[in-house]
Length: 134
Image (cartoon, rainbow, N blue to C red; front, top):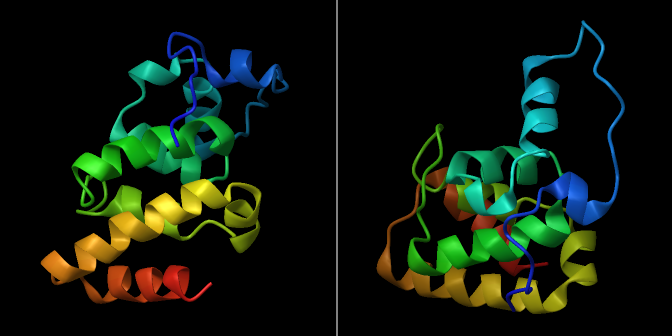
């Protein structure tokens, strides 16, 4: 399922929620996530999505976009390692997949096809098995 969303709008606009102003002590991760929420979602990179999804930010809008990427390249890479976007998506809470079961089914198909074609790293094998067993 791909949600029809205006990719020219930011998460802040789509979620209709403005985060509070950051304190001077905010971490780099928080500062980055804050800034990415202001960027149009159509401009987010694989790394941007990996970071936000890993922090459970904007999942309703970002998971469908991430699955589009993963359909074409299941081992899409942000700044960490090959398959880091897949890892971020697979490791979301089971409650996420209960809320959006159609996305979970689509991800299961992507992962099942990937397993048949690729030798996964031990980490990706583990998170893939955990996801499929949910």
